[in-house]
Image 1 (cartoon, one colour):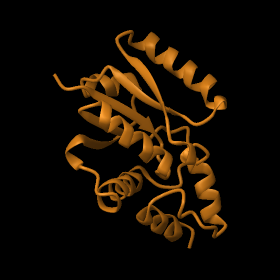
Image 2: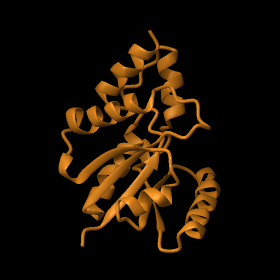
Image 3: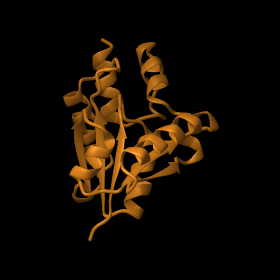
Length: 164
């Protein structure tokens, strides 16, 4: 039986921090479901379809990562329901700083209450990627700053186009 991990997030847009976690999870799991949240409580810069295309271009075109082990999906359900759909009992979450831990700890606890068969694992990106957040990348891009160290070429192109 193959081990599948669900990596949920907004990925608005995807950053090298996200990509770092995806690469690390590929070493640990047979399949990674990159799950783009399309919840109504967020103001996204990019639509779900745009984000899916941006993530796909970043992973498969820019970085040439093997497509056979990654599936990119959009979801608006509970993450635990998404896990059930993909026969996964593992949720991947990233931690950048201590400040992330309290929220992520609560989220993991709630997911565990919803389905006690699901475990949440936390990975940290490499040190050079820990400060990167989608919010900061969008702000720097909006102000015409250089975001080359934070995300892929195709993602930069999408951000520039959005802010034209």
